[in-house]
Image (cartoon, rainbow, N blue to C red; front, side, top):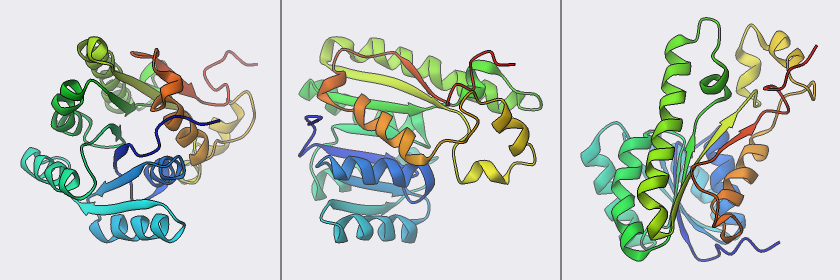
Amino acid sequence: MDLGIRGRVALVTGGARSLGLADATTLAGEGCAVAIVDLDGDGAAKAADEITSSGGRAQGYACDIREAAQVQEVVSRIERDLGPVDICVNNAGTYKGTKAVFAGMRERRWGRIVVMASIAGLMGGFGQTAYATSKIGLIGFARSVALEGARYNVTCNAIAPGIIAPNAKLSPLYERMVKRVAMQREGEPEDVANTVAFLCSERARYITGAVVTVTGGMDLFTF
């Protein structure tokens, strides 16, 4: 199925590893030119090289996403190297990343923004007050951006993943958490990345302000 985003420029923050790398690889596979932005500049460059060696188009950029000036500067470099940013996938630095690209999307009347939240933002979690609060805040942010961008054909959606490999196994509660999943297994980074690609596509042009859970049914009531 053609997602209709071939030739689009995608910025992926936190793209050097794990979920971000899967996002970048999947979007490159759909024909996007991908800017991989990460605090680990060497990791970003390596990820870009892997995509390029597989026939895709990508470039890595080192950036401390917490610094607004750095974010703006790296977006300017991306625009010079690859072109205007059409797609912004926020695995880190959601506010600053979105702010740096939103005006251009609005002016060109096309844009896709994805915010990476967590099922913890919807369900809460014992001992996770601060984490869950930050993630529900991202959902509110995504819905507000969706409202601001809607009349300009700029969509913004949030993804709320559940237990995703390989980092999930680092938790001492891993076995207990998996038992809470209806499918009785963890998800893979590609499960999230495929959802990202769909939300960034022309196929999802009428979806905005949504929160898509990728949890294997962790958020369902199970016995």
